[in-house]
Length: 505
Ligand code: ATP
Ligand code: MG
Image (cartoon, rainbow, N blue to C red; front, side, top):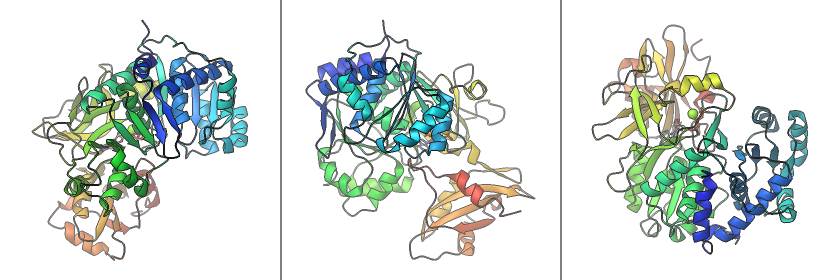
């Protein structure tokens, strides 16, 4: 029996053939029947281009329904989908093509000349284009090619995708994700978040990342529900669409923007049944403000490129602000000592490790790194520090790499940031460790004041005095207009560390 994830999707797509799969505000509409047909034609085009089962198909295109049809085509013919961040430059693309050796690179129409150069340098045999207006050479080919209406047999552990991590802590790594990884997680999330065919997802996330691609689209396909595809988050558009949607998935910045908008009311969100947040920490403050303004408790969950989704607040029951909830069915976790790797007592902070059918099978062509992070007993070392409270809710305390060790003491940036953020006139803050001749690392705060508010270093330090132990208090405080964030709303602490690296030298 074949375990191609597309088998499961196709069964659902047949059942729901007349229903909407993806629609856009410009009036494009793909029913599930359309999606089945288009995926067969695109799979035919891939075959005509020489893509064979197991081959990678690298894709750097702007968000469109057709890009998802290409993902489906890839699954159907046994290819390995490899989406790339639209922000990557030609130089960065060269690295990924060199690393992944795809059989085909699909780029934006406007990037073709540049892509041809990169492709010829990396030895990638084919390049085609896909635009946002249902245009591009790949679609022309798909119209002419003989449709591939079959479904290539695949094993559980065959690759369905290679997804590169966000590169927050270093160079992006290619996570090898199997048909089982993606399928099990989508099925789990449909259950956990009570998706049904009646749902309509407001989809404003990018589709080169696990959140918008696998969580958003695989859950939709598994449930036979529909998605409204928006090119990006635009609050005006969101407020127009909320009355026609039932679920929204967002990164925390979506929610901070909505909360700051006076249009956010119980009436505006009356048709919605669920708001999900993830990819970066949602502050308890935003969670509470959103609930106060709408009556909806945002459901925060925790996941990553390598593991899909692991831990989620409950659908029924308390969605606890500032926590990511409890392990999803089938997912196990343990919290271990950073050095000894022994489990820590409940309530203590340690390294979060995850095991389950959702966990990837390794980093593409990085056996060393895979061995370091994917343990023999199947647990994956996430690199995140966490703590489980008495009721079993998991709190993500921050990344291990962001932990500051000052004078031999561990300083958890989040704890310091939370106290700084309580100060009147502060929007947000980031606490980092910088090389320090006496302390090893010096605790340093980068603070964003509210527009029009002038804050001084002294004020921040005075506020912390008595609220935090001396060793946790920053040695210097800097002020900036905004924190550097990537498209997923992740604060780029690496950049901050680079910018202020000479502070104590
Ligand atoms: P890289 O691994 O290349 O450094 P990255 O870890 O940012 O980049 P992703 O896989 O996109 O790449 O992100 C996963 C990380 O996002 C998690 O390890 C965690 O740090 C963070 N994250 C995801 N969801 C949450 C959440 N709800 N709360 C806090 N952090 C979260
Ligand atoms: Mg990571």
